[in-house]
Length: 270
Image (cartoon, rainbow, N blue to C red; front, side, top):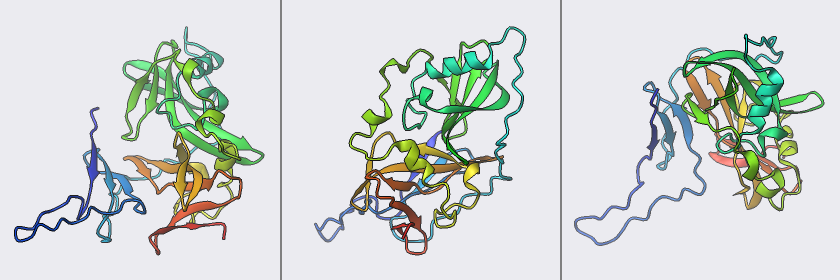
């Protein structure tokens, strides 16, 4: 299904010229502005930057939350279909481009979700995750592998599956190459979020129900080089994004999340 992405830029996004003056109005400062992101009733993903400080519109009701099943269903190999091991090998051969993973596909564990029909194919559905002890966090995006192993699809931000070419992983960067200079590994940075209070992170559901999209490079937040992880959650009517969470890459333990009452990012560990 065709989905388009709409970027909603509110009040003051353009420079205007007054009829009686040559004075030019400066464009808004976006450096401290975090968008609210949601999918509208027509399937458009809306990014609302709220430049004028007014109340941003709330996301429409998407229906009930799709709870994540931590225990995997039994893998059933269909007829001449490939095995789970073969399906994971096909996945590992794919490029991580637009998979939103902090590293290569082969560096992440795969959670089997069941069989899904897509593009005329019966497909095995997988999610990627990282774990350490009892901490388990899902990362990237869901993917499908056709039961003949010839087709792979990734779930995009509009809740549609896009084709991915197998055998394209050879030029992917490692995590160390992606995040040059970081003192903490991206998986460790992600897992450091696990035990934090969900309200302080700006989340409404349990951590296990979210999948965290990782930016493919370090970004600066509060003058600190950080990993950026954007939480997303699935509802029956689509995908809902939350404001990004930033984890300092210098191994200082600092984690920045949006404080909606202050409308600014704060260190949630303080």
